[in-house]
Length: 226
Image (cartoon, rainbow, N blue to C red; front, side, top):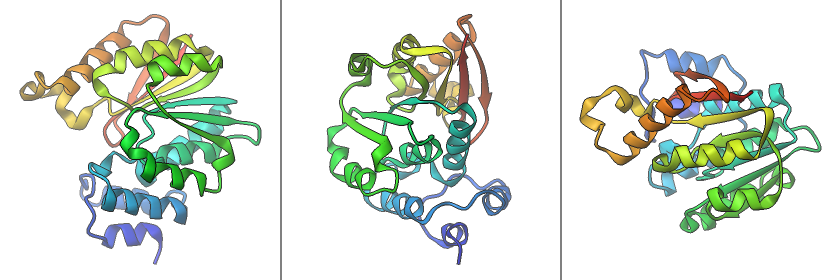
């Protein structure tokens, strides 16, 4: 049984299934590596909000985007269980490196072993701390940034990432449709929804960049610095 078939059969929480279309997509893309499948399972079993892990489809997209952009340095804000970091590191060239920041130190005991025991551990530096203040201290000009941290501070995280991103570099911002809450008036007073809405509006008016939102999973915005 393939990882995709095992996932369909298992009882872990799943993203909404649009009439079997997602299952069809998963069966027709690059298979999910076994190590990542086991990480995805462990994330859903042992961590709250396991759906926050990127998962098979988004993970394969992140890998391919890295292969297309060919960054030397990647910045990730919001490691969570490490799934997205491992996917992006897969796509790096031999001399590429990824720096991933997680502000919640309670996740370190789960996440660090998964990163350090992975086939791409030599390409990843895992840092516990606030990327908004700590990432600029690295003194690195990044080629690609993946923002997937606190939605309430997306705008501040974006400004930080943009300031240390090379011209022509890319920012990927996750969860920018926020399960549809961005267009649901019932959620406009929710602080995380408000943060995403404010971020989306801000990016739309920012002439320093060009952007497109992909309606993939929870929304993924691709941003290019001019």
